[in-house]
Length: 328
Image (cartoon, rainbow, N blue to C red; front, side, top):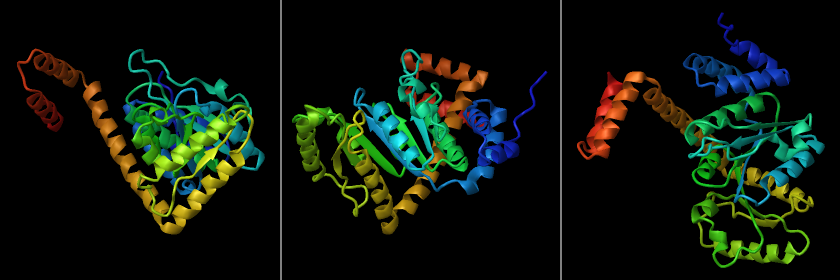
């Protein structure tokens, strides 16, 4: 006996009314890869759309070991104590070798995960980064409709995930370690170009002076980069998520960034551009899904892969054959 399909309208009404179970079921629906669920997920998001868009959307990245989880946990607790409702989402492109999750589970944020004013949700750990990011965007909208006014999106801190997260948030925060050194920890120039705020974490105890020195180096590095918004020069702060130092000032900069970009007209433009990018990301994901789900198409692709591998067919022609198959 097939279970009854989810009712998008009922789910929307439930989560807007504050039901955490309705929110969980709604997220499960938008994360589903079953074709029959995609239309239902679209109806659900359409029903929730009028209740979205008011939250503070903040992306947080940093190299492994920088203390993202500790900082998010403390920052989130501070925000809920101040009356905010906080959702934490993790963009988790699963391990390309093992298929396992790179990011851990909710236990990394022990206090926030049991806070009644917070909601912690890891991303699906399968599929392409584009697919994971699309599900994260949809989950973000559902959390906003459910009344969460702060959404923190964590990324693992390696590869393409930073760009993906920067394209779905209002403010992009990069956490760094003290003692940057001349090579600035090998940080990619592209990450600095994405940053709206840089925070040197673990700036407590003997690390304080090293953190100040690192901050000075990043300030100098940022001077030669073009800011994303001309009216905003990314600040460099020193914080300690472990000791809860500097986090109030950090959040004040997040608020100031929103105010400055709104006044400059960049806030609305960026969000509108993000919506269009979201559409294209989902379209690409759907097309890729179609290629990998249809048995005949999968068989034809494997055949073409073998021909390209042994040099009997040009890759360009193989791609043309695949695209032609989509038109049929």
